[in-house]
Length: 315
Ligand code: DON
Image 1 (cartoon, rainbow, N blue to C red):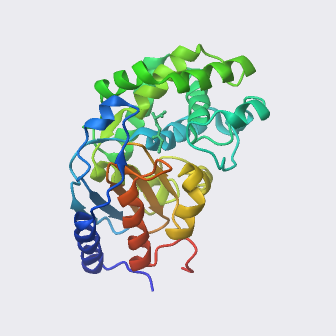
Image 2 (cartoon, rainbow, N blue to C red):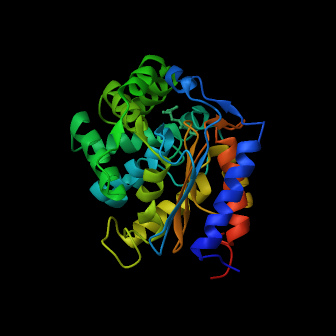
């Protein structure tokens, strides 16, 4: 049975928020980007933005957080809109089975990253956007796109987080230099990672995230049959990549437990998509061993269980 009744969804969100508030094991907040280590691990939020236009929220739904790798979804949509299928000459579409910041496959696979969601892949996607714009312009385009999707201009890049990662992101610098040598990226590596760090530093609330994810739930449109953000084919492709690669070496486990396309970030956010039903923003800063939000993963498993929203459930 699939749940669509907003009163029942309200009960489910309340139940999950209560359970998550009582959890003592909250995972570990990322500290390799020093600015992220300042976030309170007790935070939790869950927001559903449904096909019927209801927004059902619980917890810290209006607290801003750093979306980090979730920005890779928006950057991918912008790059596909710009250069279309040509993007796939620079980046693959296979799960990596390795951590998000791994370099090991790059040498064997001649500098072509496995998918657009591992760091190397997202850096290649960022370079593709930069093939037609300078960093400031490219960042403006990504940010404008996110604001348009969420219908909210109050979404911004957090300069302290961008600076913090610029000062410590040596591994990403290594990935970018390595790919520059193979010709996967064409702009200067410093420019590319500078742009990448800034889009990862987009800061928004779980409510804004759920709203910004609607285009993936409704086949590229902002609401069922509504104004279009991207082509249906593209939205389906992005969802497929989120299901198979959105949680790095935890992607199989997330698909198994939750059964929804999802993209995580080290800020503790997860954007999940229930096609035709809702976009979901979930946030809790503590991470599990593979760098995905510990409580948001559990919360989404509960949500999928209670609602029947798994993509593998018959419609
Ligand atoms: O490049 C990094 O390491 C961060 N800006 C983003 C990594 C990230 O969010 C991985 N997600 N779980």
